[in-house]
Image (cartoon, rainbow, N blue to C red; front, side, top):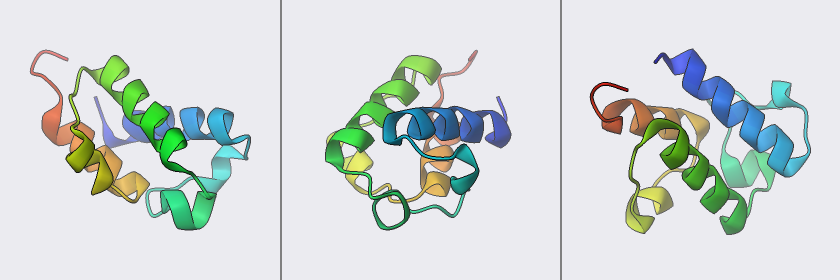
Length: 83
């Protein structure tokens, strides 16, 4: 799995969930400030990442992720081996 693959999944999920243009979502995008995502939007993103990549993210870890870049880093650092 590559950064680009994870970015694409996040981009597709948020574009669908928030009904916005996927081109607006870059690694530097801040979920709340740039996309006006609320806690429920972020919760569903966490669920999607857990389901897709098998990563487990605690509520505390999720609360520390504010940008797409941070979400990608978390997935890449925590994906189970063999995925």
